[in-house]
Length: 209
Image (cartoon, rainbow, N blue to C red; front, side):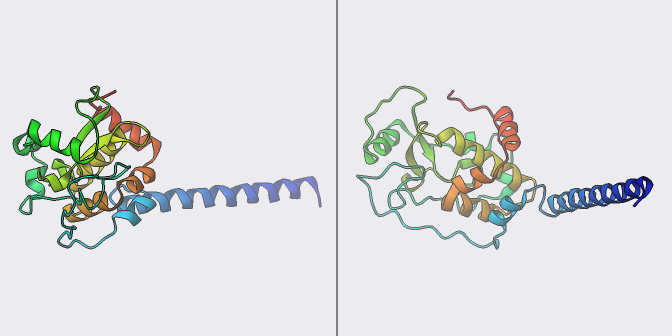
């Protein structure tokens, strides 16, 4: 084989590689558009039927276990059944519906066996299904969530903001976002890219550093 023939073969091979790379790139862009900008792993998590949310009934009010997610018997989650996408996406919505009294905070800390008060930023009384996704202020939706160890409430905040963005953009039904965050919020966080996480943290900085 002559040197010229070898060069031609190399050029053909490089051309095939380049063409394959372009195909993969455009396939990825097509899939992102089809999924509303979601990656494949996120699309799999959020590809659920839009149906009424089914939650457990709160049946435990003490000795609740603290973990990455709340004790499902103490905090199964609860929602405003009549909350709509247009309502939760309106500016100022969460402020208008937030109603957790000091007495309720102390009760939730006691249920989870955490001494109150704690240093600012170490714990928070969290809405398991967040207000911005139609969660309500019932004790069935409140739990004592730690910042540390990782992952803590700062990471869950990222998931809450991400899902709120997707719901308000029309990419994800509200009932699906509620179901996913109540079932396994950490799976959503782990499916986000580092770029997505940083973008959300920059846009929605946590109140606790």
